[in-house]
Image (cartoon, rainbow, N blue to C red; front, side):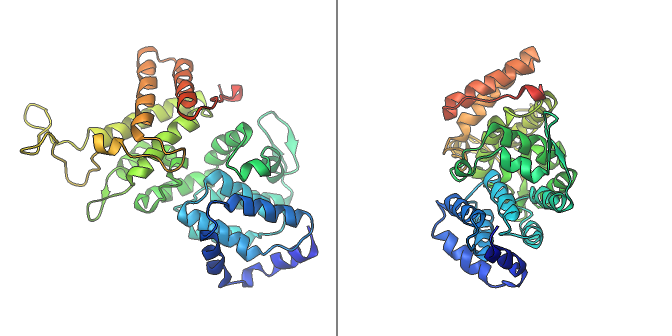
Length: 345
């Protein structure tokens, strides 16, 4: 790490007022945030000066405006920290101000604290690393991270280590209380970690008959189910299947008013059922909503794929067959091989 970068790190907390300028600059380069971070990290690694305020401003913009994803932001926060571009105060401030966008920030703060204290880290294979920071940076290539290409080991670490951090799970609970403020660009990373009561509450309307979660957010959540199922343990998959059934029923069935015979009441002169007050009502129109994270895929495609897999589960209770069906859908939808770690079977 170069001397100029060290000085920049020491003065970081006094650079108030420059973040907004950097966020504005980031807005004009929002399709290349990863490329900028990667370049700055390489500059710092070579001892060249890096503008810490600009680096952090780009992070803040990415979280506020959903122009990155949690995997990428976490990677460059930690890498920037290890290289001295960011300091502990930066991580704490970002985590405190942007809790609704990134509850996973708690784990980043914990990682930095452990790194400072020289805490060792034992990976899933029992290998000992100098720190969890070193492990995380070793399992993910920077050039690939800049292009949203994340390794199976990195995703596995995120879903099985970060998501189960006690402090992160406490954050999940806090975000559930403000579900209407949760960013639909990031909600797929923690929605399925909420309990069923929190999911039911989130899938309702807030004051003013406004949906707590946008249709795009719901499409992201359903896409995230298929994406993340490749890395869930059997116990996780069982838990998420139960939560999915609750969420899907809440969105597509629970809002319908019923007549005395238990059939949906219809709005006079239409073929649309009446809606209970305060409910998010999903039907054909919402099924056409496309996600804004995984590839502009309609919610209908994700839902049909998950329901097909769940029919297998309900008839066989075989998690391997259920996971295989989700893997097939993963390949069909995104054209990539679905990964299942033998460590978590």
